[in-house]
Structure formats: C-alpha cells, structure tokens
Length: 387
Image (cartoon, rainbow, N blue to C red; front, side, top):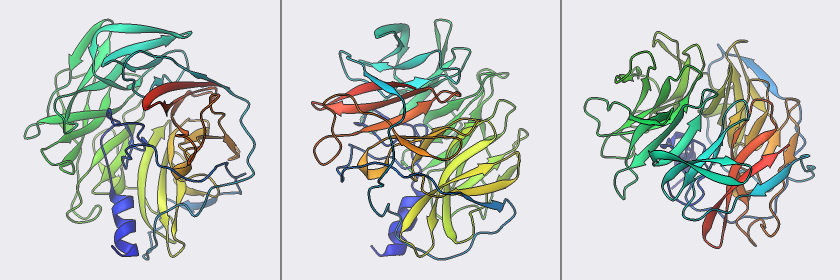
C-alpha cells in the first residue's frame, strides 16, 4: 500500500459507535469515526502547548496532495491537568462511560446492562440491556443491542424506566446511534450486511417510531466509499457527519452542505459536535501527519488546531475538548485557549509499551467531568476525571 492509499484508508474510515471490542479509540465515535481495536502500543507520552490556530473561511475550497496520515511522534513538555481520576471497579465486562452535558449523570455498561455511576456505586437501569453511547440532560440514554458476533446492532433509547427500540430504515437490518440532543432527537447510521454499507439517519423525537435517511448527494466524498453516518446534532436540529468520507452538515430541513477542508489538506472528517463547534481531523498535504481541526458553524470558519493531538473525541460549546492521545494512549484535555494538558492516569496504569494507557471519551460542558477507560489485566475499567 502506497502513501496515498494509506492516507485515503485512514481518513475515509468511518465506523459505527464503540462496541464491546476492547478499548476502542472512539473517534466515531462511538460515536465517532475510525474504529481502533485494542489499545495500541507506543512510546511514552505527553502533549504540546498549543500554538495559535490557523483560521480559514468556510467557503475556501480544499486543495489536492497526499501524505501518510500518522502522528509524527509522541508530544512532549505538557503539564498535567489539575484533575483527579477514579478507576471504577466493576464486576463483568464494562463499556466506556459517557457524561451528560451538565456533568450530573454518568452512564455506562457493565455486564451487558446500562448503569449509572453514582459516587462509586453502580446502579443498573432495569431492562436496559446493551451498550450505552450517550445521555442528555433530561436523562434520555441512547445505546444499542448487539445482535451477532459481527458487531451488528439495533439502536434504542431509555427514559423513565422504558427502553424503546428505534425504527429500522427500510432496506437496512441494523442501526447504531451516535448522539442525542436536548429534545431527544437521535442521530446515527443505518447499516447493511457489509460494515461499510451505512447511511446517516435521524430519529426525530416528535415523530416516535420513525426514522429518516439524511441526503447523500452525488459528488460528496470518494466514489465507492461506504461508512457514511451522522455524528452529532445541535439542539435546534442541525446535523453533522460524514458522507462517503466527506465532512457534511445538514440543516434542520435536511438540506446537505459540504464542510470545507482547510487549504493544504486533502481529506477531512468530522469526529464530534457540541453546540456550534464541530471537531474533526484533516490530512496535511505532504507533511506525513494528521491535524486536529474545528469548524465554527456560527462564525462560518474552519480552524487548524496547531499542536492539538489529532484524535479529538469530544468537545464543548465553550471550547474545551478531549483527545485520546493518539497511538500513545495519553489522553489530554484541551483548554479554550488551546493549551493541551495531560490527564492523570490511575496508580499502576502505565503508558505503552509498559502498559495500556487510557482513552478519554466524553466531557461535560464546563470541562470539569471527563469519562474514559483503561484496560487492566485484560479487562476494561471505566475512568472518571474530576477537574
């Protein structure tokens, strides 16, 4: 595989939400893109103090070029965030927990059942089997049940003690949710038999029992590239995601528009949405690396986040963000001023190659509560950072 093929595969890989596979880098995210399996070994880590970003108008067209999409080396010289970390002891296989935007409710999966983590206690949600993906401030949980060994699933919501299976899109047997907004709309993907046969969809809260496919216009993305999905949505109904690998936004009436790739970058992909801030990553033309980017929908601009690890998994309307730390598994918190801070690891958890490191998955709007996971003794352990 040559350099251009490698880059294309990396940047166009769009996956369904995190599954029971050990510690995914949930850039789709589960909610995010590009599934990774087990934690990847790497060098000892830290992070960078971020330089000023480079901003471009949304109307700027992308340019061509190529380069291998890999992080050049472990970042160095960053301080640790002023945070503590709790490693939750659970009985049975655990998922990666998620926090609601207000930072009040942390949910996850233990032993195949959705649970709430409450001051170190694990409180099951009766009848809520499956893998949890996200929760909103009203306590609406979204997740999915795996239906076979191929990680096919069916999406559901859970609220006030009731689990509701979400409608399947005609012609597609499987579905995965990725996000839920304040009013309970859910987005994600409908999935066919092949893992790359996916369509972005929305389940509107005001039309229970229905599902709508989001438009995938010809000319968006790379021909014959599958893996399309919605990644996030705003409270007023704007949706972002990827269509055949191309970053895309949909207005509340379903009208699609491409999000631009910054000049000097050939490929870009959406990984998260919070408020009017869309996070993603782009390939740097000719520089053999991938960079973090953000689109500010309200200001009509896209920014290259210079020095920020490329794998942003979540962020906030106020500009906080978290990253998994790339192949080095040193999760970081990024401040609104774009300073990168390492998140502390639990005692005894070491970075690769001496240990598994950890991943960060979701962050509250105030930047003070972060969820993630590590893998010790071959078992996933949920993590909660308090900052």
